[in-house]
Image (tube, rainbow, N blue to C red):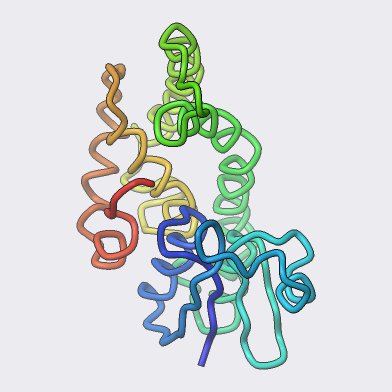
Length: 206
């Protein structure tokens, strides 16, 4: 039995849970992080020195960092459909997994913190439009990519879609005006039909 440490409201935990559902994997999830604590305890830091979630335990194997956890699950449990074994299509997936970390995460995080978890004194409304504009420019890159294919890396669902699905969920849920990105919207509609997405990602944003 796999054990996944992390609260269900964490976007990084959500993508791993969605991956497990796509692969048909049973798991036990242990609440950790934010109101559940545990991540600063010595035993947890032995598993994950960063004190973050998720952390995957698979027998004697421990894996942290959500995209690495998904890669491991596909490599270990026959997930070629989501993470191809052939180097060329795998590289197409990997580059978008890296893009999610290097480009999308830094752009969406300030918007999330301003709107969902503002500082005690509140968020200055004047600071939000520039953040949204920067985030929209990042989504426009993906919109252009999706003009030629139904999913991010190819014609099939892959880890690239799982990695970016929860960010898209937030983008379309945030209360602000957003530019029209038709290919992105159509892709979001497609991934929204996946049972794992509906169960783990289409949840309240907190």
